[in-house]
Every structure is written in structure tokens, then in C-alpha cells.
Length: 327
Image (cartoon, rainbow, N blue to C red; front, side):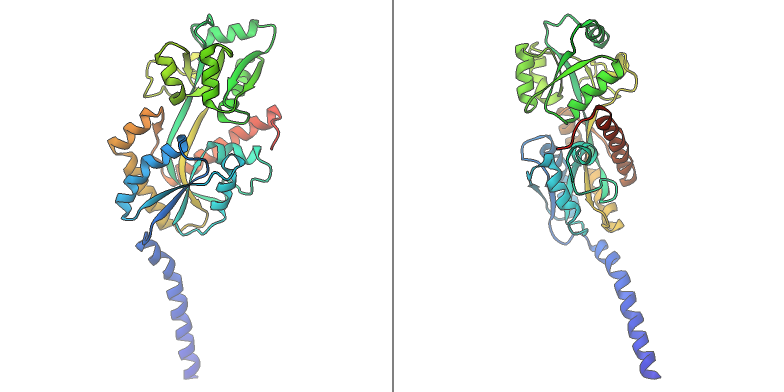
């Protein structure tokens, strides 16, 4: 009988230790460097967003946050899937953004992950609007003028975008839907080729990000009619939004944030969120993001989850309504 009691006590002790192991480890976190995966090639906006916060987070966490680009294809969905299926220990996290968490699962056949179920949101970094741009030769002063011109056109009006399925491509479709105009998409192989053709007047209207467009705008080579976010850009405060220029509620931005695999201990999620928000609160990080045309967006994990849910619902519905086929 004493033997059974002794064995029972040992079993209870083992269960107690096991039960407290995860929280204890989470409290000690991090004990080694953290890998921050960018699911695209280095040098793009995703890379800039990640690096803007990584150094500050490294300092406050006491361990390096190492940026690792994994351009594995599928518009970032391949690397995103790999992280989703990886260990939920807080040592591999992901730069998740609108194209991988909101549009990718609808556009890429068998993306292999559910943006709501397979990730633990850690917090947003920033949102970035695009610009509705025109060549200076186009005789329009504002969005209302452009819509009127489009409605009077006998043929669908050409609009340039950085590529099929990009958020700016979807922004142009959303614009056409809300303005009740017919457009002909001219998809380019990226933002820079579109910028070149806008400057040359080969395409008269386009949706493109702020950073690639800014130099040509300042040189008077192209003209911005409006920004695509609900609020005016901090970098371009005199530029109205599409929403305030005749299409109320128009909103088409890229959201950038950090996510971890689902099942990551809550204590680790809260620690990473705390350090991310602290980084975003610094003047240095805020200034760097604003110079890229982005708006710092400190959020809780729950607020970030709500953004992912809202964006996926919005863009997947549009993708279905226009019949955009999965790759």
C-alpha cells in the first residue's frame, strides 16, 4: 500500500512539474536568438518593415532577432506555410502581411494554411497606402474628374497595376466597383516597370506604392490624385484620400505585422507584443516607417487578429466576385 502511495505521489509530482514547465520556459524566454522570416526576397518593403523593428526588439529582448529571407515562391505563401507548420516556441516568427494572410489563401491553390487558425498574431507594425496616380497629360484635377472621364469613355479605361492579384490590382478593381466604371487592367511585372510607363505616358492611370512613386511625383513627371487609405498619409498630408474624394469608405492598404505559429505560449506572445510596441513607440522607428509612406500601428494581439480577419473577409469576397482564378 505504501508503495502505491509513493508511486502516486511521484506521478502527481511529475504531472505538476510538466504542467508548470511551459510557463516557466516562457518566463525565461528568450534564451537564444529569434529568427524573423521574411517570405520574399530581400530589399522590398517587407524587408524594410522587419528591419525597422528588429534592432530595437533585439536590444530589449536581450537576444538577437535575425532577419532571414526565404523567397520560396507562391508570392510568399510557401515560406508562410513552412513557418505555420513549424515549432510554436517563439524562436521562429514571421513577417505576415496582406498578400500572405488576406489574399494569398484565395489566390494560391492549396496554400496550405489558414490565416485565422494557424497563426498567433503578435501585433501590427504598420499599414501602407498606395496612390492613385495619373500622367500629367490627363486633363483631370481630382478623383471626381477621373471618374467622370472613365464613365464617358466608350472603351474600358486602362489602369496600370504592379501585377495580377497584388493588393494594388485589387484596389483598382475595388475602385471600378465602387465608382461603377469599366476598367481594363494592365498588369506589370512590378512597381518599377509600372512607374516607368506612367512617367512615359504609356499608361495614363495607375495604382502604385508611395516609395516607388515619390521621386517622379516630386519631379512633376506623374501626379497623385489620392491615397488609398481611410486617413491621409502622414508623409503626404495635403493629398486627399479616395474615400474623401467621392468614394466613401474606400480603403485599400497593405498591413504588415508579426505572427508566430498557433500554439505559441501566451506569455511569449505577450512578451513579443510588448517589445514590438515599445519599438514602434520610438521616434527613430516611427520616422523610418513614415519616410517609407507607412503609418506605425501598435496593436494588441487581439487587435491584430481582428485586422487579419477583416482583411481576409474583404479581399476574398472581392476575389470571388471578380472571378480571379487561383494559380
